[in-house]
Image 1 (cartoon, helix red, strand yellow):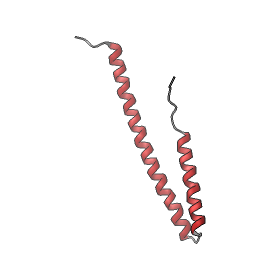
Image 2 (cartoon, rainbow, N blue to C red; image 1 turned 90 degrees about the horizontal axis):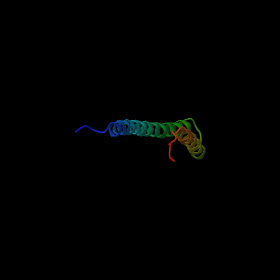
Image 3 (cartoon, rainbow, N blue to C red; image 1 turned 30 degrees about the horizontal axis):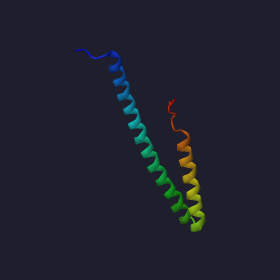
Image 4 (cartoon, one colour; image 1 turned 180 degrees about the horizontal axis):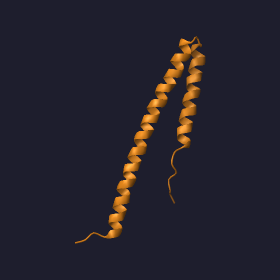
Length: 81
């Protein structure tokens, strides 16, 4: 019994979509880990350079906000109707 071509095509597209979603998820995880690491680096380097704790913490928070807002703004759009 042969498979319906429309179902086969839909299945192939679903598999491709799942692969792309997995790759996107992995890229987002890597980006989040890198942003967290960079945020810590901003703080530790600021403190090591003599910046007071509170100011270094604010600098790191500002960096984190900028990075996470930037990452959120490049989120792909979904085609939901």
